Image (cartoon, rainbow, N blue to C red; front, side, top):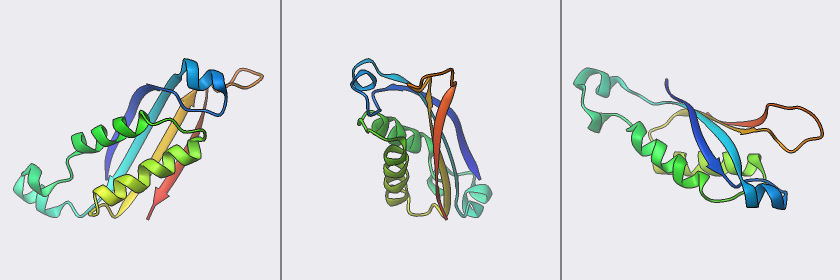
Length: 115
């Protein structure tokens, strides 16, 4: 399993006008699996799934506003699976810091899974 942990972004997701205007901090965690035996034997990036390309894809998706974390996470995972079809399993979590709630809440998050 390969993991990209704690990718941080400032983005403009949310249902409230203030969220879309002011933005917020978000974290994305992505874990994926694929048959990595060739990459492990060859030590050749061409045999691996290049996680710098995955990061760039996630970064670009974070720039497209969404109302719901559910939509954002599902959209990101769907496009990652389409772009990298060798992925056999994946988990993607989007976390929003300081969600606009009437109380102290550090974060809210949504996790989607492809299996």
